[in-house]
Amino acid sequence: MIAVDHREPDRVPVAFLRSTYDATRLNLDVKEYLLDPKTKLNTQIELHKRFPDCAFIPSIYPDFGMIIEPSALGAEVKLYSNQPPKCLPFIKTLEQIDSLEVPDPQHDGFMPKALDAYKYMLANTPKGYNVDLPFVMGPLCLATELRGLGETFSDMFKNPSSVHKLLEICTKTVIEYIKAMEQISGGAEHLLLADDIAGLVSAKFAYEFGFKYMKRIYDTFPGKIRIYHNDAKTMHLLEYIRDLGVQLFNFSFQNDLKETKERIGDKVCLWGNLEPIGIFRTGKPEDIVEICRRQIETAAPGGGYVLSTGAAVYGPDSSIDAVAQAAKKYGIYPIRRAS
Image (cartoon, rainbow, N blue to C red; front, side):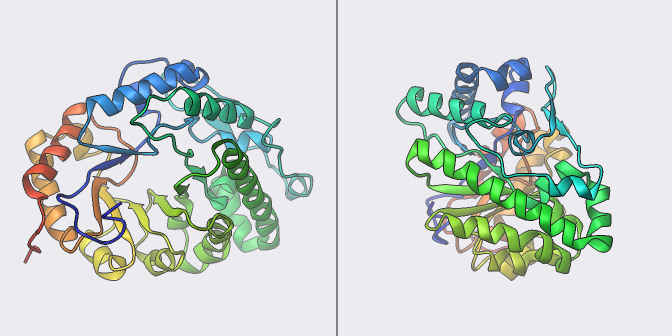
């Protein structure tokens, strides 16, 4: 929180984005992990205990991967034992968009399961752990889950009004889902939107079909810490992200860290951006420590930096340990800026 406020903590914080990695790293059946809130809670607590020097965002939360919002709108869900779940795109014609309705979080798709899991975690999580809202899908990301990526991109050129109609439904769906969660908890500290798709289109399209709708969601829940996650390269979007009022930005290894810091680091706390499926998955711990040292020297001076990967955690435990070790060794403030 000190870093988010652009002040210097005692040392550079380390935080990782949660995912169903929680289940796979313990060789659990992913389907069982998703559907059993007790297993889910115990697994997430185990991760906290194993890595006491790291934060995880969300902390304890009703993890269902990326199936909640699309399933509520009618998408078919596929669950697996050894990989994250997915939903299948089902909007084959533009006419189908006209028949879509904003779902009821209490009854539609996997939303009721997510709400029940949230209630369970709030009631059963031991003291000392925070129960957070799950990450929610940005409207553009959700639209591509329903319509398909290529089809949505084509529609942006050929049928923009239909895309906006779909985005309107997606935006209202996300808002109603968050409201249902808020009714259970009484309010949460932060709001994490995940939307990689904005990074795959031009700045003009990212604003028109992405950020404009994301801002509506953020603005519906004022007073929360605004967190944004995007796996894609976003160098062409940095000022748009800053203008969203985002306070914490988890960003891709494809971004140049130095330039990202120079352009928006005075307004946005940067959270990243080690390569999550390359060096972090297969590299030697000493190499990861060295990369982290350079990251810290580049982005940490003055505060406003959280050391992490540029996406959810996919590396072995030794890689997580290496990041925490680097923060202890090189991340003690004050930090001198790299020349």
